[in-house]
Amino acid sequence: MAARHDDLHGFVRDALARGLSRDAIRQALRSAGWDGERADAALAAFADVNFPVPVPRPTPAISARESFFYLVLFTALGAFAFSLVSLLFGILEHRLPDRVEWFVVVTPEDSIRWSIARICLALPLFLFMSHRIAANIRSGRFARTSAVRLWLSYLAMFIAVASIMGALVTLLVYLLAGDATLRLLLKVLVVVTIGFVVLAYYLIDLRQSAAADVTPPPSAAKAVLAGVVTLVALATMATGLSIIDMPWTARARRLDARRIVDLVQIADAVDRFWTQRHILPDSIAAITSTATVAEADPETHAPYEYQRQPNGQFQLCAAFSQDNRAGSNDYQAGRNPPRRWQHQAGRFCFTLQPREIERPPGG
Image (cartoon, rainbow, N blue to C red):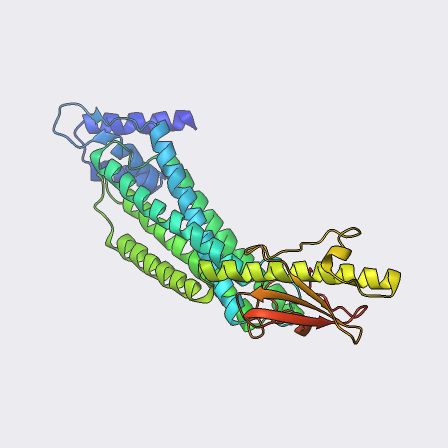
């Protein structure tokens, strides 16, 4: 293969030295069976200048700096594409909940938070590195036909094609299983659309680079595509932010969930005390010798209230930040707590019966 490359290079050099035009040389190579891309590459190896003998262009060398720029660029692209898909998935899961899914590990709200955080870093980094690389190409510091750029471009397109194929296969599997819901169809559409956008972006980039012997001007199609994707990402992030709680609200919700967990542990200890002695303890202090429980609020450090009732029941009281009766909370994957553990905002008391303590999932 190397010998054939040397033959092609030598042929083009000799033909140019004899004064033959580039079009005539290109036509001769095509007639001999050489593909247009390799013929153009061989001609591009010599500068089109007025000189008695062919003048070779500098051979592009892969520098560590150039490799670093392209690796950061494509890493940012991968993180952005993955995060945008994840963000759209989270929005779909929140808007179109699937009642068949009885348990999930990560709530849609958690997925949305992580996705927005990654996009906030990946998108500006991708745009910045794209700008810096384009400036380096225009100035001649980076080769237009960089081997690193070509390999990573084709790798990005391969991943895009593989993602599209995987999404379509998943759709077919769920169709055969009878589980092709609207949410699944929209998820497949998201993956296919983003995959095609990545393909289109790099096909435009590669064709533009191969179409000219000099550094090409900025592509209007690429700029429009990048602008549309950026606007879509910003709109999607705004939608995600409208779904999730604000940081202070999320913090208050988690503190309330912690209070419920503490009260469940106290109720368990009271239940064990009653099982062993057939009486209710007088106070929380009476059960701490046989059980390890949290006796105070995690934020205010005010002690939880325990009151024994004359009818064999007991009350546990705490001060809550929010009303959890209508919304979801963090007890298990965003699901509503059991009715026994629903509460209003402010001081609230739960009336419980030993041996009949209904616990929140995960409590």
